Image (cartoon, rainbow, N blue to C red):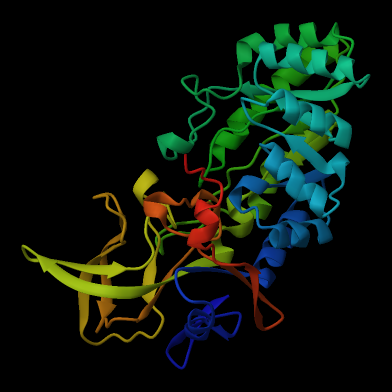
Length: 414
């Protein structure tokens, strides 16, 4: 939990100013207790569901120590790549709690997942379905599959993270799904056990989830009439978090009420794929002031973190609350907070009020636990930031700062 103690920002009682001194900036810092609390909230909210698998969406934050924490809590996992599968193998994650999503699963990814024995693949096209059947036959396996249905639901979120509209590359049109399920029933090496839909991310309204589930329920009943017995409905993830003080965040219990009654009536299992809502508010990015400047009356505060470290503001025009570690209400001035990257879009925050900034002052970029470090890059040959976990009152390094040598080591000079 973030709080001010003696006017300095602390995370779980640990001074972020001291963390910055010890590990340098830019630096990602996560609260283990917050992650645990968010997962338990989900577990309790859906406790009345007879069979529920909460599969953390690895893409939100894939640090192995974060994954290990979720495994210890009994979570399953939603993956989208071989790299994410390999991370789960390192922590001996239960394969029967892993679902594999994504539109472009390679042959290698499918084969390795089959060998590991995952719960099911969320299939995105008939081509993929037939390829999984072919690959499973080659190694004498039967692949459990779920079709990802595109219900053409508007989740009323940013268009880049709306995935359930008919214009999206994701999923199979809901009016085509029944015929593809019929195809799957006649394939010897696939076993249709699920229906999946994922309509988007950072959703703050329950209605799109309810509308999506209504369409999945209709499909479920049609499949049952064809003796295609679906064991799981996967409603994806996408529940939003608080980025701005003005955001009104729906509770997980209210969310669950909309879902559990329908699922229990259908007498099937439920799969959830939360990501952002488990880790987003559990992490921050620390950055230090480098320079202050003024251009034509506009004040800029230049910091050492940029769009290479946190892409969301540049990619989505996303808002992250930014504050000074050591702050006060006096002498506040309005700045655009910008990074070192040679792009006009390298803006981390606009019209941010900061008091008396000086070179080396540490700023806290809030709500950076999801889609932060995982989306970082080496643009401008910048090394990736370290990651730190606050655990039991101590700041523990869980990923070292990358070096320029590491960036260059795979390049071949001809």
